[in-house]
Image 1: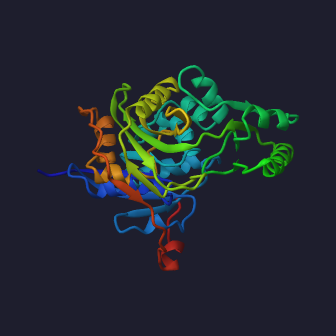
Image 2 (image 1 turned 180 degrees about the horizontal axis):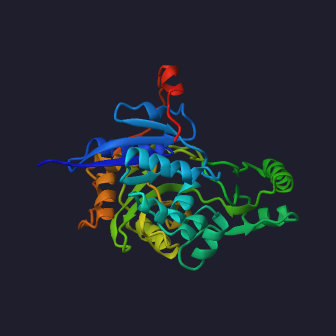
Image 3 (image 1 turned 60 degrees about the vertical axis):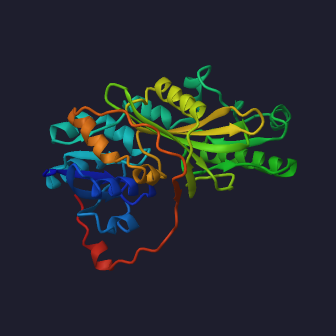
Length: 349
């Protein structure tokens, strides 16, 4: 049976989370995809994967040049579908989805307002209050009482900035002396960089990531739980995770997605199962995209991009059962060697 030809653009093409999309497109039995990657950084290693047909440098998403450049690229490469793997980029794209559609390109994203809220940890927690279990949290102002917070949380405290990603500005002090040092540092960052922070109860236990896909009507296609088995306290990029079905973790994660209006397209939710009470606690959400560990979904037979294209085409898409336990993702860093002339020759849309 001949495969349909499609042109697919993946932005944030150099990021670690797009490998599963590239693998899915290359392994599709339904679609013969021309794969185009675009990134702000032209030297990103993924840009030179053998499965990639074209590579572009694009402006940053917080500039006025971003959408015009994206539209030129869509026209030039006759792009049918766009997948973005960058949290800050997705709300911008979602706000311009009608303009993209006028140029023949479709995207599978939640509403822009929901994606904006997902970038703000405080706004996310306030929207989820009373709906899911979360660690006790204090939102900090310039005069926060460090002694009172330490006492209230029995010394098990995690400081994190309200709006960030990738493990930036997360601090877990080991003892009271380090706590006092971190509290002073947080005050300085709030004053000098105008950052907003929260202090949370530091929940210890097994960390889980729930990766989910919903269609345009909000119907669940899959929701898969994965347990992280590395032991770093701050896992900005998960390097070791195994598919491990846990129903209560999935239920809490999907409840959060629906409450946040993120049950449309891809999303993933970070959870911790406390070793004190064995309950899952919501930590944070990445709305609109897959997880960087989704290669184990691809290995289990779930083709991410086939499902995305089918949904956007209005094809019937059946719910996928949870994959069997035991398929693990191990991320190993490696150098990518290219000729600099290839980097210099990259077209700018």
